[in-house]
Structure formats: structure tokens, C-alpha cells
Image (cartoon, rainbow, N blue to C red; front, side, top):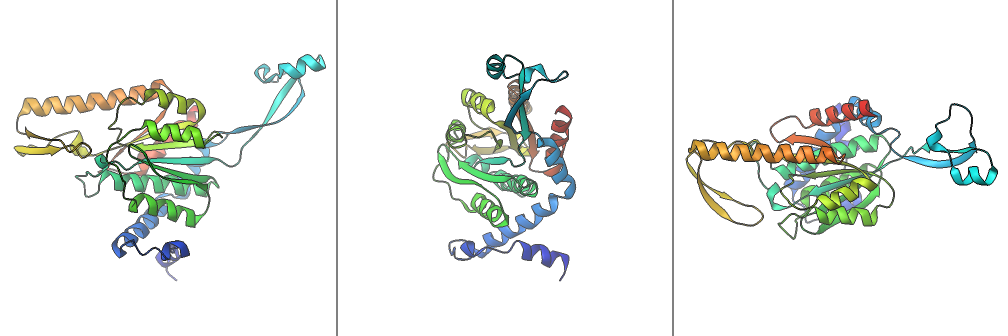
Length: 312
């Protein structure tokens, strides 16, 4: 059996998915292709980078013991110390298993792409890469799909068939709403995920007024914002008059892309928006990964893992 055949056979459709007749053969092939492609992307190197980046993320209380010279005084348990009349410190053990939540924006603004793929397709591939990396580290993966409501939720689990379900859901899900409200998944996360987890928020962040809930989620969980963007959102091509339609609101405006001043203002505005967004995330301790639809998906992710490992 060839290497490719082995890879394909290892990700064969589970029985539940085989019963689903609502997925077209084209979509099923697309899902299989993304599984194979992303499993290749998640090399042993990336898996190692992921494990190193998030090692020691969760620390679980184990016991108390008598203080000995050299112990970290910040770990002193003052209640036990007062009762025993001598210093005791808390001991923690590293949690070997993490919960990883993927929060994926499926609003209509993701139905745009100038490089052969829509932003929501890239979001699915990014989510798949992270899911494979986490599974290889023996972590559980959960999924929240949202627009301006919670569209779908899959609780954290392990296993190849579970990854299949996550990827299939992201690619095949038909959202009921078009708009984006990032507050909705952040509130939902805080409600359903009591234990601290790694959360990857995947969106183009074409939304407003979610700062409060972002801060609350960051206080409880390890939060990483993955910003999906397309080159045409940064620079307009010089092709004369075109109609630009807001995919979420449906509003259409006519602009002249040959007008240098207008094109310059557009580029300046978009660059400023992205810079301010990144600065804000950094100011509250939210990690950021910027993904361009026309460039490598893995390089920015690996770069973030390496940077995070150095900080920790």
C-alpha cells in the first residue's frame, strides 16, 4: 500500500458520516482533501512546537507540604500555615491533558477570496491544523461555530473520527444568520467551559464592541486571536469603477478604484484598523496570529508557537 493510500485509509469516513446523504460528493472530496493536506502540514516539528508552546499551561493543585528554604514564598498556603503554626506551601502538578476550543466565525464576510479560496475555507484549514496538532498532543478538541448567534457546538473530545466531525461541520455548515457578533461565542465559552482551556478565536474580526467580553474570556482562558485576511482587503486593484457589497449587511456602494486618493485612503484605513486591532489584543494579553489567504498557513502558526515558548 502506498503512503498516500495509507493516509487516505487512516482518515476514512466514520459510519455516522457515511449515513449523511445531504453532503454532495464534491463536498465530501473537499473534506477528505483538507484532512489529508492538514495532516501533512502538522509534521512532527509542528506537533513538537505546539507541545512546547503549551506545556505547563494547566497546573492542578496536588497537596501541601512543609516549607523548606529555597521554596517560592508565593506558594505559601497561609491558611494551613496559620493552623499548623509553621509554614506550608502548595504543590501543583502539570495537567497532562488540555481542552482546546476552536471558535470559528462563519458569517457572510468570510465568503470572500481573491486567491482561489474564500476566507471561511482558510479558516477551516487553520482549524484543522490546530485540531491535528492538539490531537497529536493527546488534547481534547471542541468547536463553537458562530455568526450573531451560536450556530453549532461540539463538546471537546479526542480521536480521528472526532476531527472528521469537526472539519466536516466547519466546511458543510450552512449558517442561519449573516452578521457577526463576537460577544456571543465569548459569553457562551464562559458559560460552558468552566475549566481553563486554550481557545483559538478564528475570524476576520469585522465586528465591533466586544472588548468587555474579550477581557473576561482572557481572564478565565488562554486566548489566541487568529485574524484571517485577504490581499484585496488591504489594497484595491486599479480596475476602474466597481460595486463593493457588504456581505453581511447587503449594502452596495460604487467606487472608482482608479482614484489614487480614494485608494490611498482605503489602504491607510485598513492598515490602521489592523494595527490597532493587534495593539489592542497585545495590551490585554491576547495572542495573535495573522493569516493571509495568499500565503503559508503554517508559517505564522509555527512562528507564534516558537515565540510563545520563549516567553514561557
